[in-house]
Image 1 (tube, rainbow, N blue to C red):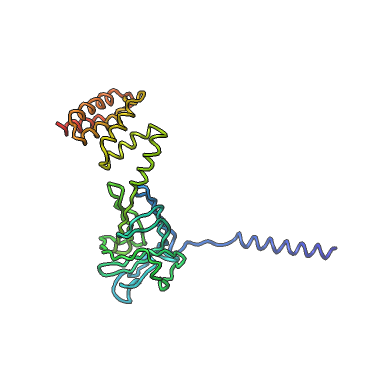
Image 2: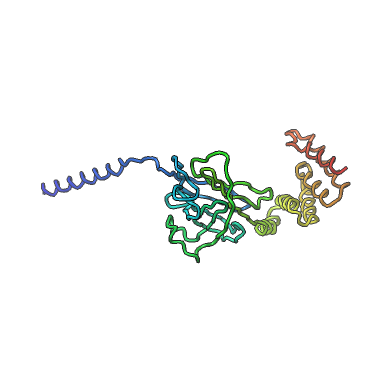
Length: 292
């Protein structure tokens, strides 16, 4: 019995030491720390997850063996396991249709143009030599640009969002080079389906639908019908910001007289607002002036 107790105590002691060893691990900074960047373009979420190598006095892109990444050599577009790009819905990358999902990015630098590859099997990781043609989703040549300031740590950004929310660039910058990979998204089908469904469920969505039709140049008669239906309900006609939308629709339809009359209504309501006009006095004055 005494022997069994000694054995039990010994085992417990070993487990305790093991636990203490696990808890006492030393963590140090990674040479190429993890990074990520994300943005919504239109209705599509784009995320880039990567590891960020630093220059550390090395020459990065150029011709010959003196460079870390010589021209023509494929690269995992980051450190460690590479760079993963995720799209929440279907997109176009460099003019090629890409289904929603996760992809690994490969790049090959060049003196003027770079090879850009989106690869469907992200488990390949850093194994550039294992690329199989049937798993390449995008293969494109894109011109790089020279930077005036040095970027010491590899950096990805989602830049140049279009005014129509349909385009952006995935930008890679490092050392003295930047590469902009164009992305295009489409959301009209989603919005139209939501309009069809939600304007029936909640009349408050009528103005959202009217604004969308106004901004995209769709059926302006339908936009005006939605705006009128909303503004004729309850106290909604006092909402000067929405009355202004109606004035914009009328103006775009070419009804200058009706647009000026409606803009003046919005102007007077905005001036009388006890909580401020939120810039709608100037907006209405500008609209009226543009129609005279």
